[in-house]
Structure formats: C-alpha cells, structure tokens
Image (cartoon, one colour):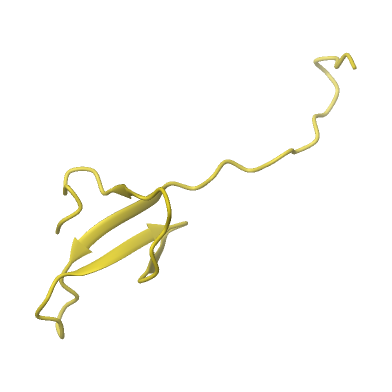
Length: 61
C-alpha cells in the first residue's frame, strides 16, 4: 500500500523509555549500598531488564 506524504500516519508504538541502574546508599537510614532502577522518571527497587548503568557513575553513587 502506497502512502502519500500529506496523509496522517497512525501511531504504531511508542519508543521505549531509557532505563537506568545505579547502586547507591539510601539516606539517611541506610548503611549498605542498594540497587535502584529509574524508568519513566520513577525510582524503583524492582530490577528492570535491559537497564544501563547511569552515565558517569559506573552504576555507583
């Protein structure tokens, strides 16, 4: 099927959000590093498949 440039395009899928992983101490009540993930701007304790280390931290803060 040929599509003209002026025809509106149907949305097929949204791009996946970047997922980040970091290892950090939760302040003020933690004395051990914990693993954290950030997806869609939200912090989570649940592992996220495909998450990358937060740039500049090598996964540690």
